[in-house]
Image 1 (tube, rainbow, N blue to C red):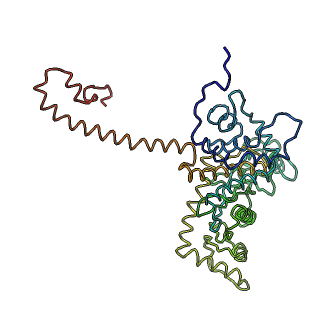
Image 2: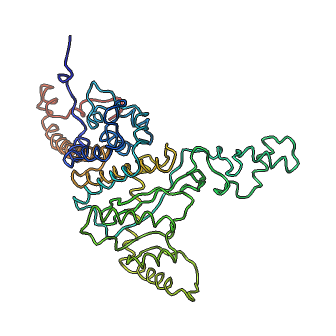
Image 3: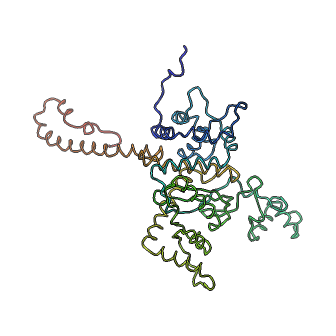
Length: 451
């Protein structure tokens, strides 16, 4: 028996993804990304490729489904009919393999991914979610796809174990054992300096202390967030061993450019809120020269000497006066809410705290689309009321809970009302059907659990 594909029954797609697809289609997402990616696709020759709109949707799915690897994204797309509908896959079409996703990512450059991020930010600006005047900046670490035991010397290229063996031989141990190497390693100060050691497969990764206190090879992701709406207006990936006062220039410049592109009527960035890591004389002087009011938490540096450094003194004192005011305290509290929340959504719930890619450019591509999906979640929360597919399930459960409680209260009231009547009518009852009709079922049955 032959049945055409279009005659097969179809299950309804997930309402969240259906609404998200509707928003993207109305804004011309596929047409826009195809124009951006046209230089990377051959016109007549080559194997069948992954369409740009489908490729970026796959990375968006990675955020909403909490998938950290491209292999996991491919498996989830093959497993879910709702995601197949979101990706535009027919029943007779196979989902893209993880190698196809990886090769497409390598072929499309960083600027195109950044342009997609800016385009999605423009949709938020159209909805009034990008003010761009008061922003906050913060950074977090991403664990690299590289192990400390694989480090090699920058000068000679020898492994860590070979380096320790050389030190043991030089100290007089002709044939050192593993216990000898471990004992020698414990006595060495500053065992893994980024100036002396690198990873052969991910040279951009740096030895860094993570948020939980452990030491790993890592990268640093830096966000600029609109504190009025919570939208991420810029994101960069920086070397993890560089300080915040050094990386702020690139990230803040990208934020100013994005705000100008998506909201030309805005006056640009007027206020900047940051934590103690961004506090330095030169940073405050540079921001003051750009007419940006700073609200940067100040570390305790004791009594300071400002002789011959009037510009830095004025900038530091002005920042100190602002953070002690009512507005400064309010903005610093908001920074903790609006800046930490995107980190939790993108890297904890979104499962990108540990990256499965190598090379800063590859990681930046994934992070750009990941945070763009975070912004889409903010847009969906404003338009629909929910920002992720899982929150939609929670909303339905929350809607059903009051109905369940109301039904429970009604049944309790019904039981209290019927019990006195049955007590009065019991002597007159001659048939058991009256008992069945009048008394609730759970009063008649004795369950084994006692419920």
